[in-house]
Length: 182
Image 1 (cartoon, rainbow, N blue to C red):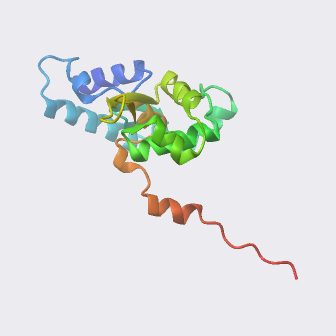
Image 2 (image 1 turned 180 degrees about the vertical axis):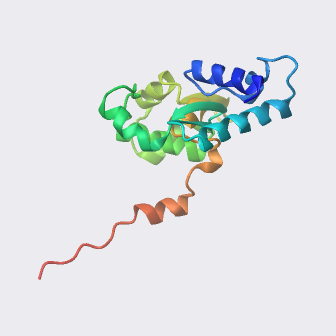
């Protein structure tokens, strides 16, 4: 493994969050973007070929060294991993609306959900999953919300295009008809 790959490995190991490629490039002033990408590819291949318990994953806006999925359950069972606080059903529903409709205002979200969403928006903002992304053109120039890179990270997405399409969700969520008792 070359020295740039080792440097990137050390930085990724020490970081609790994904690190963007541009930020990794600042670790070595002489490294070109192509050299950084080649070092990341080398590091990813090293973990894959040698059968390590971790892997290099691109998620959110950057790169992160994570536990391989096949070991996650055992680590969680031993309570070694820190779990993020769970979101309520209402928070997940609101987050999904924002993810698929962003930028979207509070009134539109409340209209879709049929309930006030002020407290849920506040909670999602505090957790860093959403942010104010713009101001609307309507009366009072309402705040418009969008998802953050932390949202992508928490849901292991590289970009929003990886969200399931709405038509795929309808098929996945469709319930099979229950057998009628005779």
